[in-house]
Image (cartoon, rainbow, N blue to C red; front, side):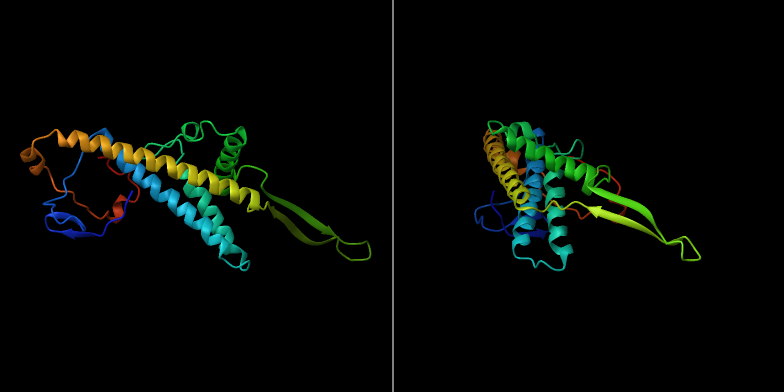
Length: 221
């Protein structure tokens, strides 16, 4: 997958680097939808990978910087494997086929870490224990102070980092391969159409979302 300079014109989107092109036509159908989804998965996986790289050049203090990058990497990686959403979800079974069982176990670990700790507080990785400091009998009152002991398990370890990096890279490679195959199939399909029919197709265009769309599922191609 390549990156191109794009500009918005009255006739639609203009992609730089194609001097012989006359327009960018919109494509539709199930292949188009899957292609769009794969491109979004690619963006999430690359963002997760960039977060992991940024951890290595971030200072130890303040603690929140590295931890925020770590959590963001896991959330964006697992976003590609959720149970629902506007796009089709990647399959860890397909992507990790042929790998050692430990690789699938690592995937399940990050899935639970995201679902039951970082995004939803369900497991014992976060604990809070209330207590009361009891004074000796020499004091006129028994309870000095109510306290609460909070403990958050450290998950940014070298082993976990390496496992997530591996999973992100494997998923990214799978997505790129699927994207390229779909592009080839779409090219073959479009080449069969008469030129006049292709020229009459709608130009590819982009409309920025409005604030009232924040709570709505986006339309699919």
